[in-house]
Image 1 (cartoon, rainbow, N blue to C red):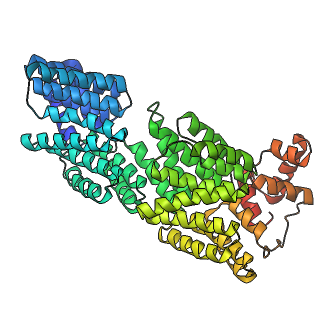
Image 2: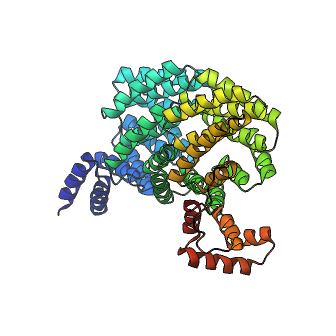
Image 3: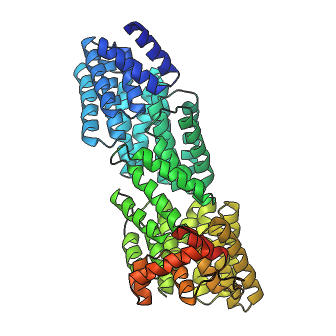
Length: 546
């Protein structure tokens, strides 16, 4: 194959969005003879999309200098802008700002009036949005949009329209912002913007929808991002976030094995990019799934790893402490977290966990204060997800305050809301609260029916910790027909294994040696014909040995 053939095939691969092929062919041709300006730009983008960040920056810088050599300063500024944009997207702030400053200097030195001035306004507007100066952000995005219209720049127009919509949503003008963001999506789906911008806007939009509790839009955009990523198998930069978003939605809907698979895949992909902000979120998602399944040891390890990667381990770690009976540790941790500043969606999730922790600590007045904050948020946002969270917290607090009739009304509302959101685990947890409320009203039959329904949900999901709790609450727990030949001590140890405790923790609790515990565990495995702690846990709940 001649060098010209490699370049031609590289261009064809680029048009098909076969980024790996395009990179291999264009970089190979470049080694034989330096590429021209157009092909350098193609190489820079293809390299960025397959995770070859250093090669992308090098090709972009060469394209910038080649534009200057050809006395095309506007194009040189645009090349510098995209090098800076990619650096900022990867978190290389100093280099990103340096390249943006270089682009601005090229335009100022030649006093050019061109579309590139509009592109350079975009990072300024994004920073204003991040700093909470929404009026300045809207004004700057509007100015960029006007430049885009004057020069017929559809990509810039889409970026400006989306950015202004995002700023409006965050400022509280949700309806106006959503309209602009939906309009911007037309530009995304019609191919008006480059793949880098498409991926960035998809990920940003999903965070916006989550931030305003618009679960339906978050799910739709996650599906769209997944389809877009799947259409480009070589794509690297956005596939990790896509998998994290998918894992979160799968967890909500009770598809826990699939959620774990997606979270693991996300971690694998994101590990190739040190310091990626989504890496901690992927590990946190794994921790949550371990905790929900009752594997508390693995959950704690994953929470710690998520924290090392920059993702707060709460509220999951606080809930883990509750499951371990460490109420005071959970309360202290959550109190510190609640003093920090959070976006509304994160704040609402934290508040629900905080209410649970405070009620476990018998701090009913503190739980009431947290619930009042949730009610104010629900009144402001009017979103089904927030309504479900608020009703659940309110019902739990009313029950603790000794008003079971009012609690029952709120909890029924919460159960319906979680059902409509197709969130079986959350609906099951509410049914446990409903059962406790029925018991407080002396309706023992109603309580047992609620506990039985919750038990059925938890068995289907495979959540060991919640199964244990509902069995402790229910009077209708039936003793197993066969105990598998286990002794009373072995049954006791199996129950502790099923909660996720290590041999050392079991030994400390029962005041026996760790070696004795290990011998008992080995005997248990032999008697019930299993080879792992997770299998023993499943056996324990399947046969109601716990």
